[in-house]
Image 1 (cartoon, helix red, strand yellow):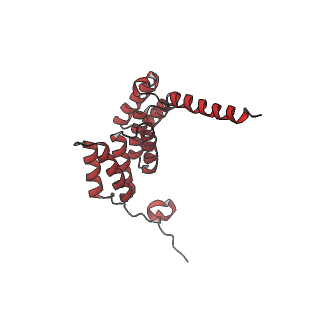
Image 2 (tube, one colour; image 1 turned 90 degrees about the vertical axis):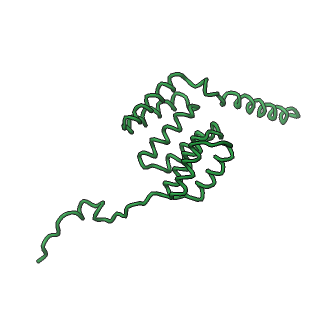
Image 3 (tube, helix red, strand yellow; image 1 turned 30 degrees about the horizontal axis):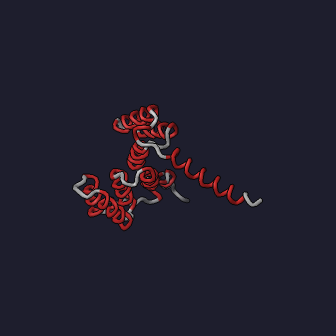
Length: 173
């Protein structure tokens, strides 16, 4: 009985140490199949096939969830679809893998601007500037997006969204 606490402590330490070694893979050790799916997703995105890009990039991440570039590209696709909240979450996943990924930081900040979260975007800009000491194009692009502000959102009414409201009014007797 007096060995039980020591055994538990040793088991916890060994589990923690072994899981850290298994969870971290450098980019060069990403599964080749995952990279192929990522490239297919990038090509579909460039061709304007956003659904095909999403499918291919999600396949890349299913094969190897350590594919940071696939997270970044999937976030770009989400932004193109107008899903800024999803894009922010995907950029965050990429940043969990590499907190110094300047493209992911800047993309996350731009998605925040598009969503209207200017204060949070400014915090991300400060992080990106701390990571990139020199002149980084993504940081400059984020700074310009913050200065420009969120895109104007067109006001819609029920008449714009409800097909029944678009019908011609009927005569009442």
